Length: 247
Image 1 (cartoon, rainbow, N blue to C red):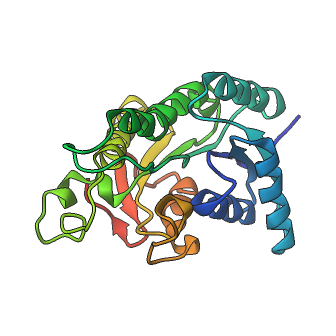
Image 2 (cartoon, one colour):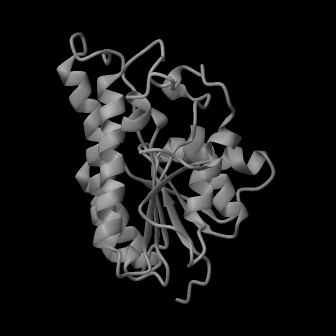
Image 3 (tube, rainbow, N blue to C red):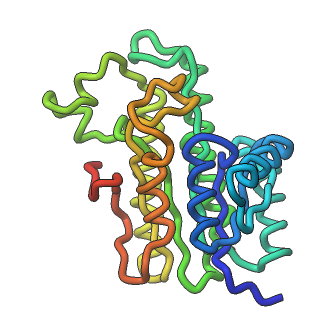
């Protein structure tokens, strides 16, 4: 089977920023694998896309980034159906109650956050890497956060430094995700695979009880651009919708 469209996998694609990224990539002509922990939720998301004016070439694929067996099964499905993967968007992540400043945060909660936000993305990237190597020009996008920026967290003039909340689990997991971006970019520096971090900005999603200041359409801009980078695009960098973002 000859596949001419770019094949894109978006984890956590059934809602929020991930859902919008799926819509954008489908609109750009990609064959999109909408990753969801629940197949039914994934199918509901695709029906929602259809009701909103067309889903394009979007298919649900079960993937829970904290469960290796589902990640491995997803890779086998992609290999069997497409033979390669062109775009991986590591979007799935959590923000759990019980996180907070180091002196008060629940260590078990912090570990669960890392299991999803860092180890989950690491697991998916490592498992999908053989498929990405079969792409003519692979792209890996890690959806990070300004809360994971060491620069912003240490700058007394930044909104992150002066935020009314501090979340050691969430922020540290996103800082670790940024390091994954840098190390993957280095490992793949002699290939056509580009790896970058996307900082969505403070976006209204379930992750923050919909308290964000911008809609998902804006939050998905940076990740979508990075997923569709030209061959002369950057790698090993961090971007927001407005351009380079500080590590």
